[in-house]
Every structure is written in structure tokens, then in C-alpha cells.
Amino acid sequence: MRISDAQLKQVDRQVRRLLDSNNFYGRRLREAGIDGVSSVEDFYKLPFSEKQDLREAYPLGLAAVPQEQIVRIHSSSGTTGTPVIIPYTQKDVDDWAIQFARCYEYAGVTKEDRIQITPGYGLWTAGIGFQAGAERLGAMAIPMGPGNTDKQLQFMIDMEATVLTATASYALLLAEEIEKRGLKDQIKLKKLITGSERSGEKIRKRIMDALGVEYYDIYGLTEVYGPGIGISCAHSHAMHVWSDYVYLEIIDPDTGEVLPDGEWGEIVLTTLVKEGAPLVRFRTHDLSRIVPGDCACGHNEHPRIDTITGRSDDMMKIHGVNVFPAQIEEILASFPELSSEYQIRLSHLDRRDTMRIYVETNGSVDWEDLRMRVARRVKHRIGFTPLVKIVELGVLPRSEKKTRRVFDERYD
Image (cartoon, rainbow, N blue to C red; front, top):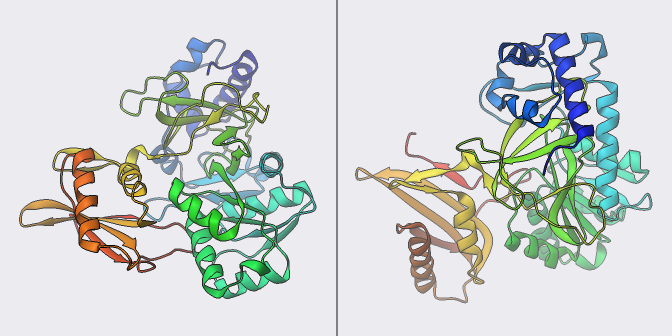
């Protein structure tokens, strides 16, 4: 997807603002010999940036405006390393709400809806983003935050919530609880909007069947406003990304080469109008592709990215083979006897690396036969045989936030 003349002008304004501010980014651009962007060639000379770069700007080195113009900060949800602090101006907050309201509209949400918000509030961008978008749209926000499942279900029923926002992991937990307690006839949910973690087709179907809802994926990250810079529509899992706020590229994660539409690679984002902390060619490490062609919804002014398949930094190396969790998930999804939940544990036993895969099933199948079939299929696809452990349905942990699925215990 080639950058437009209008987007080039926006990037040029951003670059000049960064240079004038002499913030962390401005100094990097000056060191790279950048003084503006007047052509596509100039744009491709802009250096990539990564989360580690942003960490080095802690606490407010990313600010491209005077401190008195900063009305809010947010921080990414990572639990290790120096936090990344993103400052927002009032315009940034307003622009984010506009984008989020657009997400709701693409999902068919109206001001008549009641939106139950279960993602976390605070430094994390999720909860407050979902709420600001709901208020901008004019819908009723039910700001529950995460956890307290009993209260979540009580409010879902009593407030007659029609839209649920959650991580896929927590949506699954709620769906299973609703089934277990026989509450499906008492809920009014019509739509589910999930974000913050990748969800495969199996978990989607499990949740949709249990709740009887339409399922929408929302996209975003704290470094670039937060969730709400794109969403899927009723016609496809692919997510429209708001090209009036961000410019989207897909690159080869190994070489940095920009890839043509349709090819899988790493998402790179440049903010076009963000004031507080503009980002230039930010490597998200999310793996996807730009979906070529038009969408049946008719909104073709905004490019679409496919369902996120994983992250370029999620790769596991075992027995000399590069493995992504998404590959394992795809294999497991081909077994109808298995639930959507799994866990991968890597350990070093008897001087060799070992992969154990824990999967769930019910008691109506031959567990030993299933274990052997799963192991054979993984070996055929990946090249080595894992240790497959079958457990009962519901044994693997459910999460109120994101579910951790990979545990590398080789270096503990």
C-alpha cells in the first residue's frame, strides 16, 4: 500500500515537529540526517523505532509538546523492563475517542446499546479507551473493569448489556460460566468486541456458540493511542485500520524490506496527527498482512490487516527449529476433540530441549490415541515430536486478562 501525497505531508509535519521539539525522537532523526519528508524515497529513509527505543526515553522523553500541554499518560502492559510512558494532549485524547467510536460504528453498535467494559483501567489503555469511545458514540458505558465474575454476570443480566468488551481469554471464561450456570436465556448480549491478544478460530467459535453473539476483533497498542485504531467488520475477520490517523506498512521482520500487499510480515505504524508522542515507523512485532482487494462493507478508504497470527518476537527455537505458537495452535485447531485452550512448556531435560504441549478434551475419546495423533501431526508439521499431555476440559487456567500459553523453563 503506497503512501499517499496527503499522508506524506502529514509525516513531514510530524517529522518537523519532532525536530523542533528536540525530544528523544527528534534527536534520533537529526542524527540520521533527516530534515523533512517530501517524497516516498524520503519516507523510506526514516529509521525504524522499537519498544526498547521508547524505554530509553523514560520517563517523558517522548513528549513532543511542552509539559503543560500533557493531560494524561499511559503505559504499555508489559511487566518486565523499564516502562514505556506515552504522553497525550487533549487533542490526542479526543482523536482516540473519535477512532474508538468509529470502531463501534463499524461493529454496528449504536447509542441504543449498553456496553459492558471488562478490560483493565489505570495506566493500561484498554478500559478507558472502550469507555471514551462508548461515550463519544452516545452509548451507555458499564465500566466494570476486570475480575469479579459473579458481579460481571449480575450486571450483565440486570443492566441488560448488549455489547461485551473483553480479552478473548476473559470472554471465554465468562462464556463457560454462563453455560455452567444456565444463564444464556437471561443475557441480552448481541456483540462481542475483543482485543489485546490473538484469538484463533476455535476460541472464536466456542465463544460465539456459547454467547450467541457477533464477534469483532479490535486492534491497537498503547504506543499508538491504544486499542481502537482498527476493527473488523461484519463481512470479514480482517481489521480496517484508520488511514487518516496512522500509516500502515508490512515489513520482512528479518530484513526490514517493505512487503507488497498480501504478503505476511510485521506491522509497522507511523502516527500522522498525534501530538503528545508521535511515532515514526514503529515496529509493533505483530505479524499480519495487508488484505488486498475491496471489502464487502464498502469502506475501502481504510486498508485491512488480517487476523494477527502472533508476534515476531514470540518465536521459540527448539532442536534447531524456529517455531511460533500460532503454528502449534493451528495444528491443535484441526482436532475437533480438543478445546481451544492449550499450554506449551519448554524445558531442558537430560541434556536436551523438550517441548510439552498440554491440551484439553472431554472423557468421551480415547486419550492415548488422541495424544499419539496430536504428536504425529506436530512432528509432520514442525519436524520433531513433542510430549503431548491430555487433560480434562477446564483444567487449564482461564484468565481475567490475557492467557499466558508459552512457558520457557529452560533457563529458570
